[in-house]
Image (cartoon, rainbow, N blue to C red):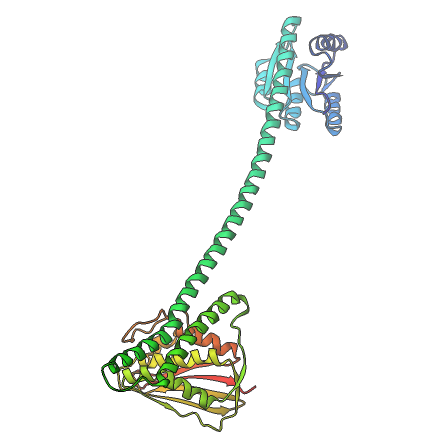
Length: 397
């Protein structure tokens, strides 16, 4: 950083020489001292110093000079450099000139001619010291502002990182909740089926009827299906970004539905319902994930049982239409109001007409995910008092 500059302006060379000697004695080598014999020359000198990045700390100007008066010169310098301190030296300045300099040039001091060396020396030393102190304070303030800006940027970055972490934690929390809900929903059907079989066995304990092999087989199959459901749900959660993973097999749909109807027989018997498998045996093989599609049929059948009074009839149909297999699960129950049909395939949505609430509203949502993963569509046709027909399509290939 270059040394600050002090400019002396007077139209009398002897006065300028005297001021320069006094300034050298007081300031030593701490400042550069320049002189000008008029206001116009002083302005040119000032602009030249500014263009060379010098800081003008102090201007001492006479009031009475050819051309511009001292108060006008100091005003123009103040407009160009507000931090520069201004001192007016004159024996003829009137009150109006001093007031103008005070008001428009922030006059630091007024020294009357003839001055005493002690007065001038003290005033100049004090002025330069104040200027340097103000500049140091300004530099520190600017540094603090820069640090503050840097700190604000760091705080903003940390805040954004924290928000991102919070969003990730919230997403993980939602995934955890969905996983727990899915486990609760999907394990309820096989667990309840096992319980109903056990209850039927309980009634046979005191009777002479022996335990049949078919009952034991169904109990084992139900338990195995519970473990497979857990594995499947874990796989779905781990591959959430890729969607539902499927393991395709060519499947005889008629035999497939018959097996499901047999497994759900305890439910239908308890509800005094009639489950009819109307899938034609000569239907072409469909390439599906049997385990996942089983969940769809079970969800739709159980919904009919859950949302209707005992004694209903449920029919499962399938046919080939326009290159796809169109399946349906239709009941003759109470039907579904139009308002419920709008959002019934969304997650955590339960119909208000359920006689018993055993789930959390994930069954139809999961069914839609599975059918869409197969490349098909799912929907419902129903009206209040006219039963309900849930349909879905499966590509033949």
